[in-house]
Length: 260
Image (cartoon, rainbow, N blue to C red; front, side, top):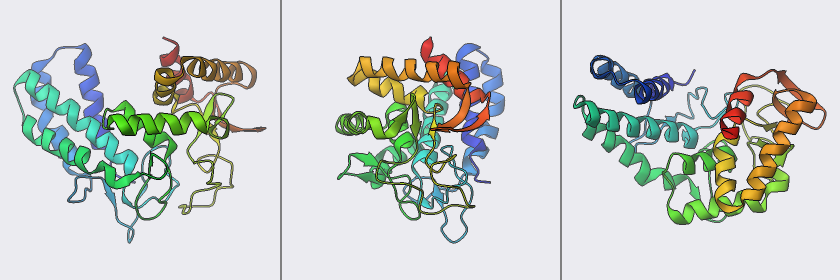
């Protein structure tokens, strides 16, 4: 299993401390959170790296996809965790804020190694599965790592390809020209699950991209997914008559957050 528990734990603790001010608690757990972040395999450029010779399960709701080399989604999560850890180190005057900033800046300065100027989107990885990452490109905007130009190009791409990317208010991982991922850890039929089905999970960070450019499109997307939930239930992913995992919690929570 690819090691992203460290960044996730850091983000969870930071979220908790944004609600409850406990300086002694952060001082106690910060060194442990730092060790968790140290455990993640990163390249010299700071990006999270998956060795093609020994590929591990990766994140981005694509654990069956064999993405290798420098990774987009995992690097964005690591970046986000470091930014939050730096902020709390400064707030509570403990830990090494400069080190978290250094790691975040490395990713910020090198994330464009995964940028595809021809499409105005990010690659999911730069070795195996060097394919456009729909979810990851929007997530890059959400964590604040994109330039103004990149933000505009990603928004343009998502809106101009909306009809091919979105079904019943839900979004596929893959670009319109990709019917499947190039490498998988195990077989998965095209158009199903992580290999081309449509999910509501990424709406939490994709709908805000729409909202800044086309509020009516954002509203339509949200209404469409709610309508589908009411008609077909809250599923993990869909594609036509294909439905997978009813009562999927992430689908419900991420859409609920948008309605608020």
